[in-house]
Image (cartoon, rainbow, N blue to C red; front, side, top):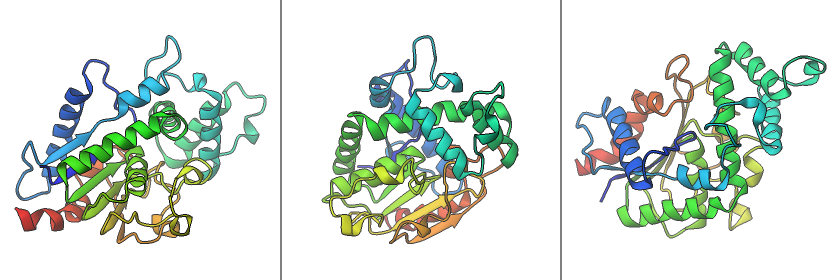
Amino acid sequence: MSRIVAVHGVNQYDPTRGADAAAARLGAAWARALSQNVPSPLGASELSMTYYADLLQAAYPAPEGQGPGDDVDRLAPEAVDAVLRWGELLGVGTREAQGRVLTPVRWVADGVAKRYGFGQEPVRRFVARFFPDLLAYLHTPARTRVRQRLADAIARHEPRILIAHSLGSVVAYDTLWQYTDLKVDVLVTLGSPLAMPDVVLPYLQHPDDSRAFSCPPGAAAWVNLADPGDLVAVPQPLTDTFRGVTACVSTGIGAFRMHKAGGYLRSAATAKAVLAYLEPLG
């Protein structure tokens, strides 16, 4: 049994390992990062990673000749549309791009980089990696298989804590709503895009519409953490869109690490969010 079940974010596909080996490697890295601010370091069996990147890759492979997240100019049309909507949310439109050398996606990525003080190349790489994974989850049959994999992990480990980063927070939210018999003491979401209008929010699924956009019934508590400069965790705070969030924490994780899982996991705020659920069984 693991006290923590974790769910990773985007760009985690590992073509050199099978799903179990990739999960073990990524889970160990998460445990090490989280242990930096936890008095008793987490043992190898205390955190179990639910790996699902292989399912997304099978459903939405990169274009021929393109590695994972290589080129913002070769995104599928539906990914381009999502990028443009994201740019508008961050105050970067494409009206001025007419007649320019840059493609609309590259224009948006570079505009976001300039507006928020990031380098162009890191933002371009982020755009090229985030949106294909997001669309593979939301708009292909892989969604059902990903949720089932997480549901199986929760049922097997009966964790106290479900911790999810980035797209993983959408997977966790979806799964707890789909499998309402699953129970966790706390859902901890890091850098979550759940509230992103047009791109994510309209596609969330709730068996009971009267309870839409609220804490899943299987989570006794919900803690959300977001860096103020996280380009994915928008709009903030999450409590403006979702009911039942126990705590919504704005925490800085460092320049140029605004959406990295490691930055969130190493933060004191994340440690504080999980310690209350680790200590009673420590």
